[in-house]
Image (tube, rainbow, N blue to C red; front, side, top):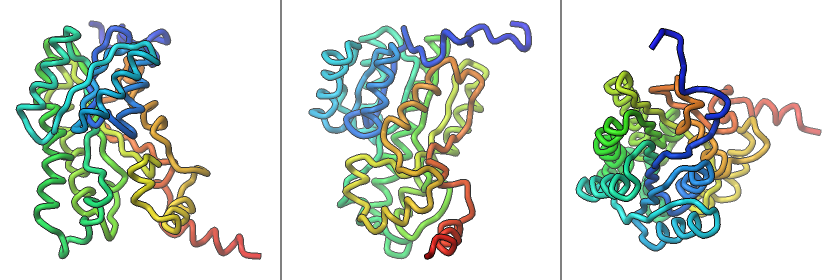
Length: 283
């Protein structure tokens, strides 16, 4: 190929996933569900993977019967390597290949999040489970997806990080640490396999009002967070799903090893902006 050529990139490929096979972990709800459905609408065949078998089956059924796409469910604990390997094998066996992996699975149960406080209060069991699911689970997805993608000739891995990986807080120390590890892992995978046609990028969402997030954040805290957004609203799952489809498609063919914030501008301004604005808005 002549340097500068980009034979796979033109307007007709923008957001088009026809003929691609995708696996979505944590696909039973929230961002995972929105992303699985968005990729199905874009033409991909989707394996909807989730630890909740009923949720995975419901999303796959919706894709098949309402969206008119192709999907199958897979019950997976991403912390278990045998189950992750079987998930990838199911995609290849059913649809013939694997081209896209969205590593989205994470622990979002409110009762678990309530146990994530500061480092001096951290229950080691909580830390270990967070790392096993959010970080090791992402690594295992990459480990087993990359060979299948190499066999297919190319692939796009999208790892779900978080704004919590980019700035500290006084809670969720295990979550933020795991998601920071996801960003580093993303760069290493892209570096090792980029010249073999594998792209690996991360998305760092801001406050996205999934059912799990809504249950965890009290109204008073939401008000403070919204004041610190440059956009006039919180995110919704489809905001992230749109970015997933972009990174999965040939429209993003020259993007590799990046962590992209999709956060309504939460991370780009001075931390005292909301307080300064409140001074000018007083009667």
